Length: 329
Image 1: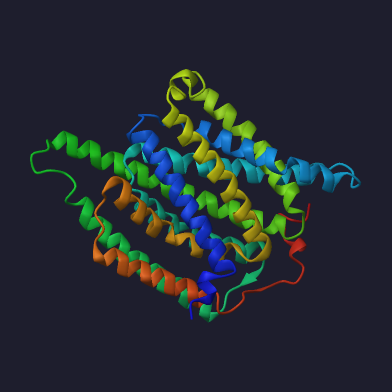
Image 2: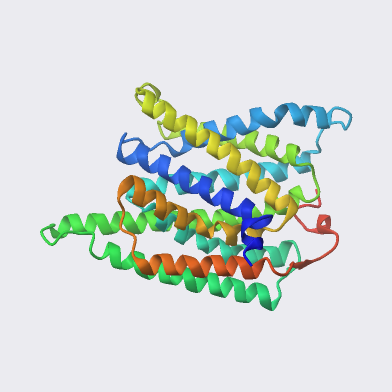
């Protein structure tokens, strides 16, 4: 019964969900335990490693094909700008006390964004089965949100002052807004990435987007003063190990995500990674002793059921994807 979840697109989606949850764990550790918030610098290393890993294959592939047209470079520059900002906002949100599980929940905002953009730009048509799958997953997430709300309502002690309560609430709201913005931006990135990699080589996409992403993230890190504190940033073995782990996970997520877009579709990917919150809940309980109510686990069962239903029927799309506006470059 669960073959569609545990193999093929389902397995790839869960692999990304686990890695994204681990990236959240590392970022939260840096913020809480090392007092470091360096979202742009983390992305600089991640994009840089991705570029270096796939550069040899890209050079071999392009050896006899001539230079890439400027229109394709512009398309990948736009994708890199969107993707790097989504990653930056997602990492920055942990500075404001966002729970790992909440990050997975709020990322569900990518679903309506991806559905609308895929319909408009890639001419994807979703059937009744897909709509039911999305509905079931959203209902499951609603249960998770309710469970999280009940936890946060008890998170401030009765003895806390009114001012500290307001500060905590404001920080959480700001962090949630960052995650919502990140989710919408990721939706843009995923749809445009799907349109590109379905008609061009994956190494071309990975190398060019990660190269542009490295430059943009580096400039952003310099502007925010993250580079000026590099001696403080790498002052301990634990911090260096955390950066190394995040960098490796970033490159693995970028490759797996791109490969998924090449083989399947953006909505299926974003639906699959809704379980990032589930893995985040597990890691949060093990590492940070975060509370796990039963209602949240029941909600995630609904998410998994929705993923299973979605992968029972393939989406219909226009045969020539390269006719899509973004891809016709």
